[in-house]
Image 1 (cartoon, rainbow, N blue to C red):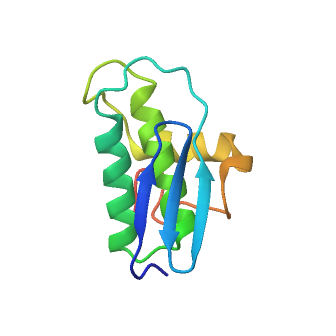
Image 2: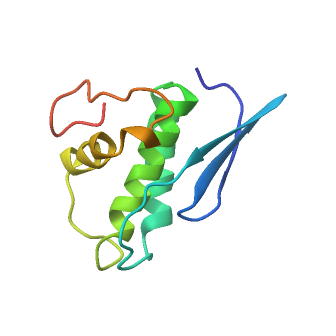
Length: 111
């Protein structure tokens, strides 16, 4: 469960999650980058979503990294996407998950 934490997004390479006394690193998803505008906002949205739902750090980091990568792989600051595409990206890259991440709300839910 998340308590107090500092996260540092180092671009598409990784997320560093810092809590006392440890730092966890979660690698980013490898995608063909088309446009990075908006990917940081998407990353932040995924991070805040998981934090609000009190997900584990690993699950939150996985979603944040996947959303940022998904948006970076498309043109424009606010490209069209649905959550099923994000879960698909996660499922296609199981080695990127710090722990299993399942979609508990159905194919188009991030809850």
